[in-house]
Length: 108
Image 1 (cartoon, rainbow, N blue to C red):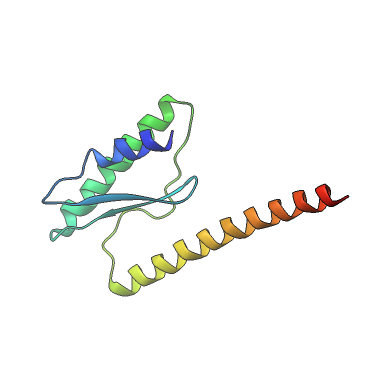
Image 2 (tube, rainbow, N blue to C red):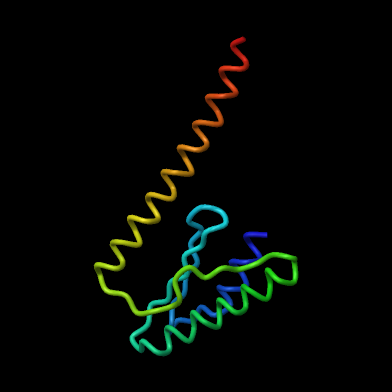
């Protein structure tokens, strides 16, 4: 499922407009395009989002765009990196809590 989503979006990756999809924490993805032309980069992201949306819809899924494509500054990039780190930490914390509950039950 995740591979199909990534493949659908990565179909828009070109040498002129490099494109990446990062899995932050399932089902949260970060789409990133590096472009010298702001409009082309945003257009590329919108096309990829539409393609991913159609792939998910075919399989009964849904897509919610939390932040529409836009050009970012270095500050925005640092903020996004912090959000990704926080999401990863939360996921790890949730996994640790689930694991500790199982250990306590096994000790009884």
